[in-house]
Length: 542
Image 1 (tube, rainbow, N blue to C red):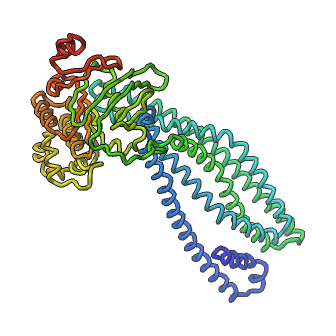
Image 2 (tube, helix red, strand yellow):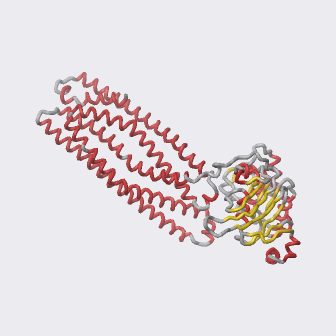
Image 3 (cartoon, one colour):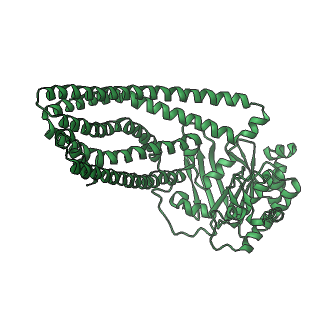
């Protein structure tokens, strides 16, 4: 409606040379001028409203596309993250913005530019059918320009996005490994690597921009040529008295609206192509099924379950087996230690218990129920795996302790868990105690303090089975011994230690020895020493 009012007033305005000026009609001239001013004001308000509504639409699309992407990524299995770089995953956020931009632009063109094109086209045809016929000749020319660049744009978009992902991955990798970089004095080496990757990205981006500029230049040339031809043909018609000056001015003025709307629709092509490539990259992630799909849920009680591994084997895809024919029974409330040389498969075995990876052969049972038939959320509420490298999130200490834990936890529960983990005193020495803020990964805490904090977090979880994978490696011997004894006193918990320090094995006195992916020994500290096998050799190196 706003555009129609504006068009009607403007048509009258361009009749000035034919009627108003020759007849010296000042009053109608003033009325038309005021009307045109109000039309411009209305058009300004309409443009503002349109842009504001499109901004809201863009935000809603962002919520749908980007937030769904985040939710999907967080639900993907561990195997996915072991084969993907963080930067590659994060670069998809930029890809998502390209999809959103294309969708918003398409909506503008469909509902606004297409409407303007039809209305203006009709008016132009009524003004002069011959000029309009010449105008319509640009459509096949524009179509040719679009299709001739389509293939190149697709390839360049793909290369540019992949190159951008490589740069992002390297930057994130270097920031995370900054301590190692500085200790090795390899800042320049890593900087040169990123420089080369960034230069490659800039080169691909420049090639893409150059091609886009060539296409835009050709489109502009076609548009200017059209304006010139219309002016030339129209001027000849005016000379022959086949067209008035006012009509020619009106046609040229409205032609700007027509070609602008046509250009807006045509310029969707590179955006849509970029969005298609971006959408394909997003779909690469969406094609990976989240680990909570197709899980048969059971209401089977896991509170005091016995864990049994029967002939369990595991290998990464087509690689040689990491674990072979593992048979192990872990009774409820049991405290045991798994030891072995580095790379023997200890951590992998424990990760199978929480179903980070599916076993290649055999089965893992809890109360005779295969863990594949237990929902992973229920399984991980029953078994809590604490990795060797502790990780905390930005926020308060209390927020970190309560992360993923029961909502019924009291302040007393928190203090008790922290005292058991021997981190309570360290926290109370901070100015704000449990409300003290931690930055990303708690850089103000030592490695040992972070390990004890994550142990306390595990103790607050509803899990009845706790797996500590070298979770005390950052502690001194005395602190470690006291902490292990505190954990051993938790009669309601089944605890599995993975340890290199055999002092932990001596305390638990229930030891399983793994070598080359196989269980080679089981028994108490004294029994294994008498065997004088691998455990005996490990003890001699302590």
